[in-house]
Amino acid sequence: MKLNKIYIGGGLTSDQLLWIIPILESFYKYKITHLIFENLEIKKIQKSLMIKNILKKYIIVNKNEIFPIYFQNNIIRYIYVLIYYFPLIIFLSIYVTQKKILNINIKKSWFVSQIFHSIWDTSLSMCSDNQIKPNFFIKLLACLKCAHSYFLAKKLKKIGINYVILGHSVYNYRTMLAYFRKENIPVISQAAYNLHKQKKYKDTHWSEISIHDFIKFKKKIHISKINHYFGNRIIGKGSYLDSINAFKKKSANFYMNYNIIFLHVFKDSPFNVIDRQRIFVDYFDWIKSTLENIKYSKENWLLRLHPSHERWGEDQRKIINKLIKNTFKVCVPNNIFIEEKQSSNIDLFKNAKKIITFNGTVEVEAACFGIKPIVISSDFLKRIDKSMVFKPNNKENYFKLINAKNKNIFKLKPKQVENAKLLLFLREEVFYLKKEFDGNEIYRSDTNKIKTANFNKILKKIDKKKNYLKKLGVYLAKYNRQTMRQKYIDYING
Image (cartoon, rainbow, N blue to C red; front, side):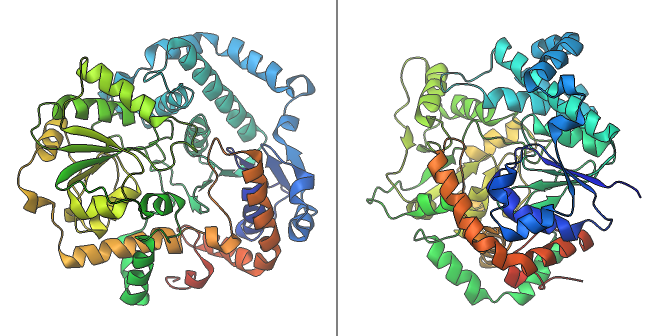
């Protein structure tokens, strides 16, 4: 009998495994013999009777057990990887810089570009709030982590892995993702309580949707339902925690006709989907270049801090102050302001002149308020209607746009606003499975108490979802789409 092995890793946590394992059971069309886990608290997840019964069917292996006994210790294995790849690790620690990431020669090779992004991404995630660029030692550690991920991926291929499930598509896990795809090993990624298939040479995103499926949903979901959700969302009652925090009613503090730059968590990765045509490398590069340009502007500018930066373990004010100090040297121009928690997003969107962001939910939110946003690296809106978003193809065009005087070019038509609200609804009510399991968002610096509470909430719910999860597995296997909420799963089948 052929042995069919699935690797389950990439930073997946126990609360995620509770709903992912039942999906996998009905997903893979061949009989699975082995489940190989990166980390598995077997007793913990077997508190679910459904999970306990599922795991009985397979040979359960910890990733360390695929190595000879002398390599099963993580420290020993890392030391070996450091010695084996030492010349390459040193070379990449020196050679990989911010300027090199989008170098034309690097961009020509898909695999090299993936590895460079992985190293740079991992380096930035390890920086302190006082660092706006990784030093040599941080890059050395990042290269070592990526080399170890590469070493593990090669070993998994050697033992005949058939399918891979990854909890992250970023940081050092990007190295694994790139290797598996290069070797034609299928990969499913997890993000935002969602599973989605990866293509060989094109990254996919959990809320990505084709225009064909968008039209299907538009015919099935009534506009009143979409407007009802949007009405709840703008008063802080949406499905997405960041939006709940950002749209909570706060003291009136209006910024009329400001250009608003929505910041991202600097240590959070911008590379879930790698856009090799983007004009800035990362969040730091984008903000630094933008500040250098707007210091000569006569318009008012607002830097809106990310609503969840503290739970990410980041002091964003410290980082932005350092970037401002490096840019302006002496003092901040009196037309640039930093905003955090004083105003609701609803007030900012209603009164904004322009909205600028790197990527993400903000671009869709801006369109919902009738504003055509300026973005650096995204195609959420572009997939539906290219005229709904500005995505400059060079820095010169970007600077022209952010300094444009004509407000009319940033106004969307009512039909476009309607489409944006549907897209937001699909992201948060259809593809975001959190409500199915009564789960919560978990951030990097959350306490064990918060994580345990989330695990217990999902555990309490999961056994009742057996049929739904089985159906999701069949659906994921049959269609080249992401998972979706139970009440919408039959909307676009076929």
